[in-house]
Figure 1 (cartoon, rainbow, N blue to C red):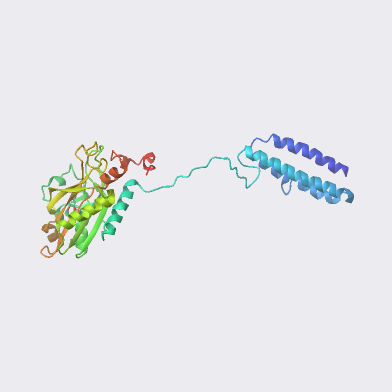
Figure 2: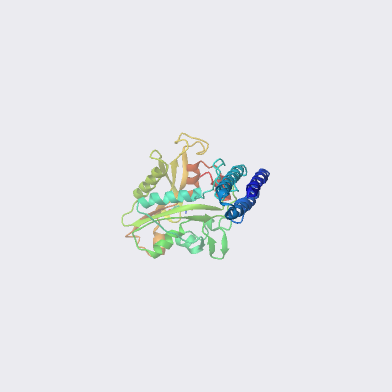
Length: 337
Ligand code: DAH
């Protein structure tokens, strides 16, 4: 049985030299099975041990165990070089981290979330309406005359006669008041569409957030207070708000409102075109004609409404100078937020 010891020695030499010439983790796996597997060489030698003379068994047994250990160590060591393989649960701590991409909200929707949460804190609820609207909700019920330019084909995308893509979120005012009696306190963020040629400040699809507050005794002072409170919560307590007389068919009186430039603090810069103010949108006291369309008693109730350019607010808070970036969905841009 000296023979068996000799065979073990030969096996060791050939096994180690074959391990040395292994080229990959896969090679190592094959050799591991051949040398150490249940049906492998060393198991075979272990079984032969039973037939060896009793006095030699301890020596041969020790030799088999030593070889198991040596071969396993060689396989592990070679595996490091191949970045794995050789050993099933191999883990190389020196490899660089594989970064995984975690998705997040689009900057526009982050802004919508923040607008909603600010108005939520003031008691407003979120309402919604369809993107594909009828002329009635988009224009007629909002007291917009038949010949108003906003109805023009060059401004509005028509699906067919009497049906269009909404050009503003104001139709949600009508849909809400049709369903609900006062008090009404809603905001309605959503997509709007206008037949504009895209440039740095125009996009044929954009976001607005509508607001509406109707109750007994609501005044213009409430409108000014609400929008000013929003401006401060969104852009900090130093932002100032100004209201300029304007005209909208659905409000009387109507205003446009501006925030002091959040980039330069009102001193004048490129973004505010050196006048210190940024135009945000329009607002006003709900016109009695609008109340009539939804069956509200305009002698009893008053209300204010406003629009808000979500794209503009997003661009200001993240210092984005081209609205098209918000709609091209270039992942390198989106990932920055
Ligand atoms: N719908 C107007 C627009 O798209 C914005 C607006 C102005 C909304 C006055 C209002 C409002 O609710 O009262 O420009």
